[in-house]
Length: 118
Image (cartoon, rainbow, N blue to C red; front, side):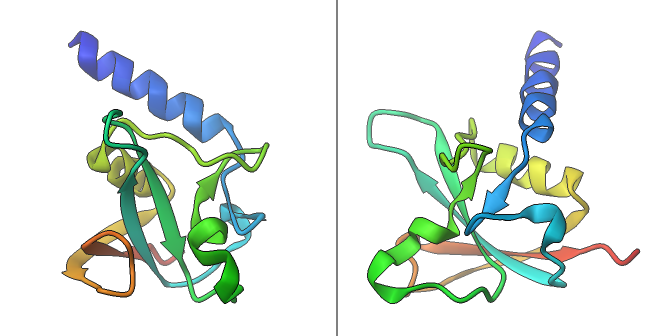
């Protein structure tokens, strides 16, 4: 029970921040589908970052820098796990569709989410 309360508080704290991708607030992004990759922060930390591709234009020589889900200070948000990313996106109105592999992305799995219709 304590772990559930802790997870809930973490998600609420992250929801209070204005999350951005490529310096654009998630509330201003209106795609039906997004691709999400969950990347480990390092070999020594169990926390992860999330990158989101909604079809935005990205400068090739900057790599995935502009795909990271960031906070108000443009720092990548740290999540406890892949499931924490999924739960967070669900709280924003996105529904998990499927996972597939994509060799163009540094992680081996890409997850497809669909925005709920208003």
